[in-house]
Length: 335
Image 1 (tube, rainbow, N blue to C red):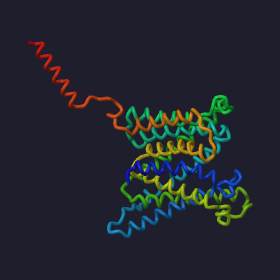
Image 2: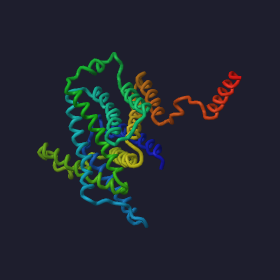
Image 3: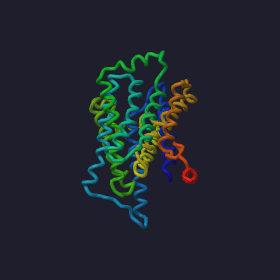
Image 4: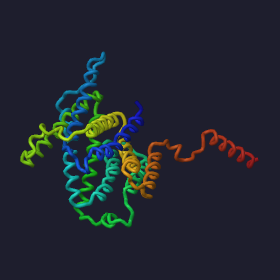
Protein backbone atom coordinates (compact mmCIF):
# COMPACT_ATOMS: atom_id res chain seq x y z
CA UNK A 1 0.00 0.00 0.00
CA UNK A 2 1.41 3.48 -0.86
CA UNK A 3 2.61 5.45 2.14
CA UNK A 4 0.40 8.44 1.35
CA UNK A 5 -2.75 6.29 1.66
CA UNK A 6 -1.58 5.01 5.05
CA UNK A 7 -0.83 8.60 6.10
CA UNK A 8 -4.31 9.68 4.94
CA UNK A 9 -5.96 6.88 6.97
CA UNK A 10 -3.86 7.87 9.99
CA UNK A 11 -4.98 11.50 9.60
CA UNK A 12 -8.63 10.44 9.56
CA UNK A 13 -8.26 8.13 12.56
CA UNK A 14 -6.26 10.65 14.59
CA UNK A 15 -8.70 13.46 13.84
CA UNK A 16 -11.65 11.34 14.94
CA UNK A 17 -9.87 10.29 18.15
CA UNK A 18 -10.59 13.55 19.96
CA UNK A 19 -14.18 13.64 18.73
CA UNK A 20 -14.87 10.04 19.83
CA UNK A 21 -13.24 10.70 23.19
CA UNK A 22 -15.48 13.74 23.72
CA UNK A 23 -18.57 11.77 22.67
CA UNK A 24 -17.63 9.00 25.14
CA UNK A 25 -18.14 11.42 28.03
CA UNK A 26 -21.37 11.54 29.98
CA UNK A 27 -22.39 15.00 31.20
CA UNK A 28 -18.85 16.23 30.67
CA UNK A 29 -17.22 13.42 32.69
CA UNK A 30 -15.70 10.02 31.99
CA UNK A 31 -17.72 7.19 33.51
CA UNK A 32 -14.78 4.85 32.88
CA UNK A 33 -11.17 4.87 33.98
CA UNK A 34 -9.40 6.59 31.08
CA UNK A 35 -6.10 4.90 32.02
CA UNK A 36 -7.60 1.58 30.90
CA UNK A 37 -8.00 2.83 27.31
CA UNK A 38 -4.25 2.86 26.41
CA UNK A 39 -3.84 -0.55 28.07
CA UNK A 40 -6.66 -2.12 26.04
CA UNK A 41 -5.35 -0.41 22.90
CA UNK A 42 -1.92 -1.98 23.47
CA UNK A 43 -3.56 -5.39 24.00
CA UNK A 44 -5.55 -4.92 20.78
CA UNK A 45 -2.39 -4.05 18.80
CA UNK A 46 -0.59 -7.02 20.35
CA UNK A 47 -3.40 -9.44 19.39
CA UNK A 48 -3.65 -8.11 15.82
CA UNK A 49 0.13 -8.26 15.31
CA UNK A 50 0.28 -11.78 16.80
CA UNK A 51 -2.48 -12.93 14.44
CA UNK A 52 -0.72 -11.66 11.32
CA UNK A 53 2.64 -12.95 12.57
CA UNK A 54 1.06 -16.39 12.91
CA UNK A 55 -0.22 -16.13 9.33
CA UNK A 56 3.29 -15.25 8.16
CA UNK A 57 4.80 -18.19 10.03
CA UNK A 58 2.39 -20.56 8.26
CA UNK A 59 3.34 -19.26 4.82
CA UNK A 60 5.85 -20.95 2.50
CA UNK A 61 8.48 -18.31 3.28
CA UNK A 62 8.73 -17.86 7.07
CA UNK A 63 9.38 -14.29 8.26
CA UNK A 64 12.70 -13.17 9.66
CA UNK A 65 12.59 -12.91 13.47
CA UNK A 66 15.67 -11.88 15.43
CA UNK A 67 15.47 -13.40 18.91
CA UNK A 68 18.86 -12.31 20.25
CA UNK A 69 18.61 -10.63 23.65
CA UNK A 70 20.81 -7.71 22.56
CA UNK A 71 18.09 -6.81 20.03
CA UNK A 72 15.00 -7.65 22.09
CA UNK A 73 16.24 -5.58 25.05
CA UNK A 74 15.98 -2.41 22.94
CA UNK A 75 12.19 -2.60 22.59
CA UNK A 76 11.24 -1.56 26.17
CA UNK A 77 13.07 1.76 25.70
CA UNK A 78 10.27 3.54 23.73
CA UNK A 79 7.75 2.55 26.43
CA UNK A 80 10.06 3.94 29.12
CA UNK A 81 10.48 7.20 27.18
CA UNK A 82 6.71 7.55 26.77
CA UNK A 83 6.23 6.81 30.48
CA UNK A 84 8.64 9.62 31.42
CA UNK A 85 7.01 11.86 28.79
CA UNK A 86 3.55 11.37 30.31
CA UNK A 87 4.84 12.37 33.75
CA UNK A 88 6.59 15.43 32.30
CA UNK A 89 3.29 16.40 30.65
CA UNK A 90 1.50 16.42 34.00
CA UNK A 91 4.36 18.38 35.57
CA UNK A 92 4.24 20.95 32.77
CA UNK A 93 0.52 21.51 33.26
CA UNK A 94 1.15 22.51 36.88
CA UNK A 95 3.04 25.58 35.60
CA UNK A 96 1.23 26.55 32.39
CA UNK A 97 -2.42 26.66 31.29
CA UNK A 98 -3.74 24.12 28.75
CA UNK A 99 -3.74 26.62 25.86
CA UNK A 100 -0.08 27.49 26.40
CA UNK A 101 0.80 23.81 26.75
CA UNK A 102 -0.99 22.97 23.50
CA UNK A 103 0.92 25.68 21.65
CA UNK A 104 4.26 24.63 23.15
CA UNK A 105 3.49 21.07 22.08
CA UNK A 106 4.10 22.14 18.48
CA UNK A 107 7.81 22.33 19.30
CA UNK A 108 7.90 18.55 18.81
CA UNK A 109 7.63 19.18 15.07
CA UNK A 110 10.97 21.00 15.03
CA UNK A 111 12.62 18.68 17.57
CA UNK A 112 11.55 15.67 15.47
CA UNK A 113 13.22 17.23 12.43
CA UNK A 114 16.42 17.90 14.39
CA UNK A 115 16.63 14.39 15.88
CA UNK A 116 15.63 12.91 12.53
CA UNK A 117 18.65 14.67 10.99
CA UNK A 118 21.25 13.92 13.65
CA UNK A 119 20.07 10.65 15.23
CA UNK A 120 19.08 8.85 12.01
CA UNK A 121 21.54 10.84 9.86
CA UNK A 122 18.88 11.76 7.30
CA UNK A 123 19.67 14.80 5.20
CA UNK A 124 16.93 17.39 4.77
CA UNK A 125 17.05 20.06 2.09
CA UNK A 126 16.75 23.75 2.89
CA UNK A 127 13.21 23.76 1.47
CA UNK A 128 12.26 20.83 3.72
CA UNK A 129 13.60 22.62 6.81
CA UNK A 130 11.60 25.69 5.81
CA UNK A 131 8.53 23.48 5.36
CA UNK A 132 8.96 22.01 8.87
CA UNK A 133 9.23 25.49 10.39
CA UNK A 134 6.15 26.58 8.41
CA UNK A 135 4.25 23.55 9.73
CA UNK A 136 5.12 24.59 13.28
CA UNK A 137 4.00 28.17 12.58
CA UNK A 138 0.80 26.98 10.91
CA UNK A 139 -0.29 24.64 13.70
CA UNK A 140 0.57 27.27 16.32
CA UNK A 141 -1.35 29.98 14.43
CA UNK A 142 -4.44 27.80 14.29
CA UNK A 143 -4.35 27.35 18.08
CA UNK A 144 -3.77 30.97 19.08
CA UNK A 145 -6.98 32.57 20.30
CA UNK A 146 -8.13 36.12 19.73
CA UNK A 147 -5.99 38.76 21.35
CA UNK A 148 -9.00 40.07 23.21
CA UNK A 149 -9.11 36.91 25.27
CA UNK A 150 -7.39 36.36 28.60
CA UNK A 151 -5.37 33.42 27.25
CA UNK A 152 -3.27 35.78 25.11
CA UNK A 153 -2.11 37.61 28.22
CA UNK A 154 -1.15 34.36 29.93
CA UNK A 155 0.73 32.91 26.98
CA UNK A 156 4.12 34.32 28.03
CA UNK A 157 3.46 34.81 31.73
CA UNK A 158 4.17 31.27 32.97
CA UNK A 159 7.20 30.49 35.17
CA UNK A 160 10.41 29.53 33.42
CA UNK A 161 10.04 25.99 34.77
CA UNK A 162 6.92 25.57 32.65
CA UNK A 163 8.71 26.46 29.42
CA UNK A 164 11.69 24.25 30.28
CA UNK A 165 9.40 21.29 30.99
CA UNK A 166 7.46 22.03 27.79
CA UNK A 167 10.69 21.91 25.80
CA UNK A 168 11.68 18.66 27.55
CA UNK A 169 8.26 17.19 26.72
CA UNK A 170 8.71 18.08 23.03
CA UNK A 171 12.19 16.51 23.00
CA UNK A 172 10.97 13.31 24.68
CA UNK A 173 8.07 12.99 22.24
CA UNK A 174 10.42 13.41 19.28
CA UNK A 175 12.99 11.05 20.80
CA UNK A 176 10.42 8.30 21.29
CA UNK A 177 9.26 8.58 17.68
CA UNK A 178 12.75 8.72 16.16
CA UNK A 179 14.01 5.86 18.34
CA UNK A 180 11.02 3.73 17.36
CA UNK A 181 11.80 4.36 13.69
CA UNK A 182 15.40 3.34 14.35
CA UNK A 183 14.19 0.06 15.88
CA UNK A 184 11.80 -0.69 13.03
CA UNK A 185 14.46 -0.10 10.38
CA UNK A 186 17.39 -1.59 12.29
CA UNK A 187 17.05 -4.91 10.44
CA UNK A 188 14.81 -6.73 7.98
CA UNK A 189 12.72 -8.45 10.65
CA UNK A 190 9.01 -8.93 10.07
CA UNK A 191 6.97 -5.83 10.90
CA UNK A 192 4.55 -7.97 12.92
CA UNK A 193 7.36 -9.57 14.93
CA UNK A 194 8.69 -6.11 15.78
CA UNK A 195 5.17 -5.00 16.68
CA UNK A 196 4.68 -7.98 18.99
CA UNK A 197 7.82 -7.01 20.93
CA UNK A 198 6.94 -3.32 20.99
CA UNK A 199 3.33 -3.77 22.09
CA UNK A 200 4.09 -6.51 24.60
CA UNK A 201 6.27 -4.10 26.56
CA UNK A 202 3.72 -1.34 26.00
CA UNK A 203 0.98 -3.48 27.55
CA UNK A 204 3.26 -4.38 30.49
CA UNK A 205 4.09 -0.74 31.25
CA UNK A 206 0.45 0.34 30.97
CA UNK A 207 -0.55 -2.47 33.30
CA UNK A 208 2.12 -1.33 35.74
CA UNK A 209 0.63 2.16 35.60
CA UNK A 210 -2.83 0.76 36.51
CA UNK A 211 -1.32 -1.16 39.44
CA UNK A 212 0.47 1.98 40.62
CA UNK A 213 -2.83 3.88 40.55
CA UNK A 214 -4.34 1.14 42.74
CA UNK A 215 -1.55 1.49 45.31
CA UNK A 216 -1.87 5.27 45.33
CA UNK A 217 -5.62 5.06 45.99
CA UNK A 218 -5.20 2.32 48.58
CA UNK A 219 -7.35 -0.03 46.46
CA UNK A 220 -10.33 2.19 47.24
CA UNK A 221 -12.14 1.04 44.09
CA UNK A 222 -10.75 -2.49 44.06
CA UNK A 223 -8.01 -3.97 41.86
CA UNK A 224 -7.81 -2.66 38.30
CA UNK A 225 -8.77 -5.96 36.62
CA UNK A 226 -12.13 -6.04 38.44
CA UNK A 227 -13.11 -2.56 37.21
CA UNK A 228 -11.35 -2.74 33.83
CA UNK A 229 -14.54 -2.41 31.75
CA UNK A 230 -16.65 -0.41 34.22
CA UNK A 231 -18.55 2.37 32.46
CA UNK A 232 -17.60 1.17 28.97
CA UNK A 233 -20.03 1.90 26.15
CA UNK A 234 -19.97 1.31 22.38
CA UNK A 235 -18.35 4.74 21.95
CA UNK A 236 -15.64 3.86 24.48
CA UNK A 237 -14.81 0.70 22.54
CA UNK A 238 -14.60 2.80 19.38
CA UNK A 239 -12.04 4.99 21.17
CA UNK A 240 -9.98 1.89 22.01
CA UNK A 241 -10.19 0.52 18.45
CA UNK A 242 -9.36 3.93 17.00
CA UNK A 243 -6.31 4.34 19.23
CA UNK A 244 -5.12 0.80 18.52
CA UNK A 245 -5.60 1.09 14.75
CA UNK A 246 -3.75 4.43 14.73
CA UNK A 247 -0.82 2.80 16.51
CA UNK A 248 -0.66 0.01 13.91
CA UNK A 249 -0.62 2.56 11.09
CA UNK A 250 2.13 4.53 12.84
CA UNK A 251 4.30 1.41 13.10
CA UNK A 252 3.78 0.80 9.37
CA UNK A 253 4.90 4.36 8.60
CA UNK A 254 7.93 3.96 10.86
CA UNK A 255 8.90 0.81 8.97
CA UNK A 256 8.24 1.88 5.40
CA UNK A 257 8.15 5.70 5.52
CA UNK A 258 9.56 7.97 8.24
CA UNK A 259 8.81 10.19 11.24
CA UNK A 260 8.29 13.34 9.19
CA UNK A 261 5.38 11.71 7.34
CA UNK A 262 3.87 10.81 10.72
CA UNK A 263 4.35 14.38 11.99
CA UNK A 264 2.57 15.81 8.96
CA UNK A 265 -0.22 13.28 9.30
CA UNK A 266 -0.87 14.04 12.96
CA UNK A 267 -0.57 17.81 12.41
CA UNK A 268 -3.10 17.72 9.60
CA UNK A 269 -5.32 15.58 11.83
CA UNK A 270 -5.28 18.31 14.47
CA UNK A 271 -6.48 20.86 11.92
CA UNK A 272 -9.12 18.44 10.59
CA UNK A 273 -10.35 17.91 14.16
CA UNK A 274 -10.86 21.66 14.54
CA UNK A 275 -12.82 21.79 11.28
CA UNK A 276 -14.98 18.79 12.25
CA UNK A 277 -15.62 20.36 15.66
CA UNK A 278 -17.38 23.21 13.85
CA UNK A 279 -20.08 20.75 12.76
CA UNK A 280 -20.17 18.40 15.77
CA UNK A 281 -19.69 20.75 18.73
CA UNK A 282 -20.62 24.19 17.34
CA UNK A 283 -16.99 25.25 17.48
CA UNK A 284 -16.63 28.81 16.23
CA UNK A 285 -14.09 29.06 13.38
CA UNK A 286 -11.51 31.82 13.72
CA UNK A 287 -9.34 33.72 11.28
CA UNK A 288 -6.30 32.10 12.94
CA UNK A 289 -7.68 28.64 12.09
CA UNK A 290 -8.04 29.44 8.40
CA UNK A 291 -4.62 31.08 8.26
CA UNK A 292 -3.09 28.07 10.02
CA UNK A 293 -4.68 25.65 7.53
CA UNK A 294 -3.34 27.67 4.57
CA UNK A 295 0.18 27.79 6.06
CA UNK A 296 0.14 24.04 6.76
CA UNK A 297 -1.00 23.23 3.23
CA UNK A 298 1.84 25.35 1.82
CA UNK A 299 4.24 23.51 4.13
CA UNK A 300 2.89 20.14 2.97
CA UNK A 301 3.45 21.08 -0.67
CA UNK A 302 6.94 22.45 0.01
CA UNK A 303 8.11 19.31 1.81
CA UNK A 304 6.80 16.59 -0.50
CA UNK A 305 6.64 18.24 -3.92
CA UNK A 306 9.57 17.67 -6.30
CA UNK A 307 12.00 20.59 -6.45
CA UNK A 308 11.22 21.27 -10.12
CA UNK A 309 7.60 21.97 -9.17
CA UNK A 310 8.66 24.56 -6.61
CA UNK A 311 11.12 26.46 -8.82
CA UNK A 312 10.60 27.47 -12.44
CA UNK A 313 13.62 25.88 -14.07
CA UNK A 314 14.15 25.98 -17.85
CA UNK A 315 13.53 22.67 -19.57
CA UNK A 316 16.54 20.92 -21.16
CA UNK A 317 15.14 21.53 -24.66
CA UNK A 318 14.71 25.26 -24.08
CA UNK A 319 18.11 25.40 -22.40
CA UNK A 320 19.78 23.77 -25.43
CA UNK A 321 17.93 26.10 -27.80
CA UNK A 322 19.03 29.17 -25.85
CA UNK A 323 22.63 27.92 -25.87
CA UNK A 324 22.59 27.43 -29.65
CA UNK A 325 21.19 30.92 -30.13
CA UNK A 326 23.99 32.39 -28.02
CA UNK A 327 26.62 30.48 -30.05
CA UNK A 328 25.05 31.61 -33.32
CA UNK A 329 25.01 35.25 -32.16
CA UNK A 330 28.64 35.02 -31.12
CA UNK A 331 29.64 33.64 -34.53
CA UNK A 332 27.72 36.35 -36.36
CA UNK A 333 29.42 38.96 -34.18
CA UNK A 334 32.86 37.50 -34.94
CA UNK A 335 32.21 37.53 -38.68
